Length: 287
Image 1 (cartoon, rainbow, N blue to C red):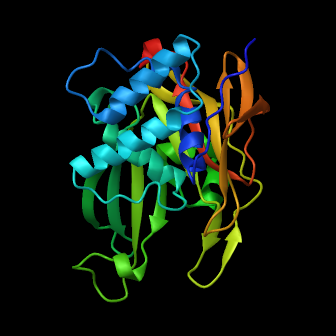
Image 2 (image 1 turned 90 degrees about the vertical axis):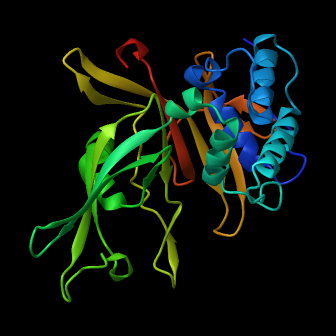
């Protein structure tokens, strides 16, 4: 079986290469690009890239074309441009890619919805209740994740509000907690883990006991649960101010380590270097 192609790093774009390889491992993402219409340059370049992969053409320099398209679309929308200037966070880069694809169908496959409720600990009064839409699950509370497991954590969790984030009408001495209740799961799940925990004065690496499962199930309806399979992880090596990104991703029932243009077979498992984990629905007919 042919080894999939790596992507050349002509600058500080390992973040882009790693995210692209993760996205290209999603059959749902790759099958979402239809006929061209009035789409963004980023959309067009991804569509061309996927077509090249299907035709077994060389894609080694494709990340440069994607980067140029991203910069063009960001300029056209008059948004700040910091990609291509120094190291970029792969999570922020992923958000920019999805934003610049400018395609509701593709973006909806990543969106999850939480009901966000702020409640007073002392009185039990609900101060606010809103629904929030995001395309990445950010996991800041590693203790709760370890205690509940991934499925139960995603379904519901809570956090204590810092004093700086208390409601405007709060009473002196009262404390508040934010509860998150899941209302919609996406077809493609992206989970972001903290590489480091910090209190503003010092930082430490996260708990090494955090292991994300290779598959998990979420409740759907009376027909049964939805199964999610892990398809890729993005890893970061280095410190808070820099480092290097690689990805480990599945292709054609094999798992590979993508380190820019270098590709070799590997295993998919959560390490302390894991920064992003990608899952997608395997029993797609139930969504």
